[in-house]
Amino acid sequence: MRRKLVAGNWKMHGSLSENETLLRGVLAGMADVKAAVAVCVPFPYLHQARHLLAGGPIAWGAQNLSQHAKGAYTGEVSAAMLNDFSCRYVIVGHSERRALYGESDEVVAEKFAAALAAGLTPILCVGETLEERETGVTEQVVARQLDAVIGRSGIAALAASVLAYEPVWAIGTGRTATPQQAQDVHAFIRAKLRALDAEVADGLIIQYGGSVKAGNAAELFGQPDIDGGLIGGASLNADEFLAICRAA
Ligand code: PGA
Image (cartoon, rainbow, N blue to C red; front, side, top):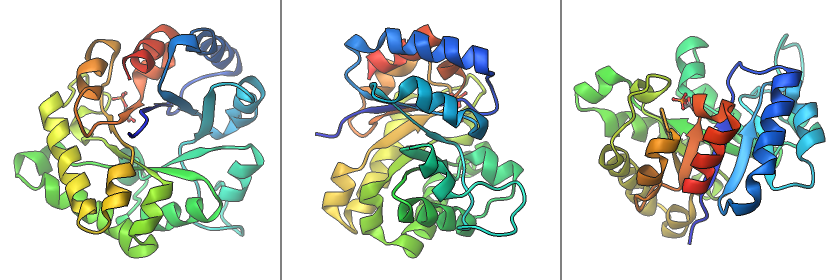
């Protein structure tokens, strides 16, 4: 049985005081949460996240990392630096990074490899744009994004990672994929991976992300191939996030 994982992606939100309120609020409600829970916070708040969360039920991580180990890369953060803050997870290939910061499939594959090499668990995001969905190439796009990573790191490497299917048109738009639309892509991903390695495919956590809320989480997470969620906006409110965690 795959355990469900709910991860908050705070994106570029928060402050020391807001984070403290949020994390203390989530911690206070964790007693009846059965799913694994994590928060992926902005780099400057990793120290605070570790301080507040160490020894408790919530893991923490980052939203991005450099594909390089060290060197003259102004503004970048390496996997080893994330390890310094005891990160467990790092989001890789989020569609905002692909679209706004020009991260190609190849760069994403390098980042994935760098995370794994450092012992971090990458949360690899894949997903199609609205135009791609409407032109019927969703599966090709997701397959291409996965193939870049599998080509670089091998199928066995996925066993140490998490996938997140995030249709770009559903992110931050309030427009969620229907449970069936999401399940269809999740099942496609799992079948594609099963053809390469059944054990890896069946054990892999595949989260759904894109306008998950307390009100739609249970139905999404009830689908056979949806193993929890990557939560943006709704992870910024303790009660809403906890309700999603309970739904998992
Ligand atoms: P959203 O973001 O929940 O705000 O749609 C999800 C994500 O981008 O990971």
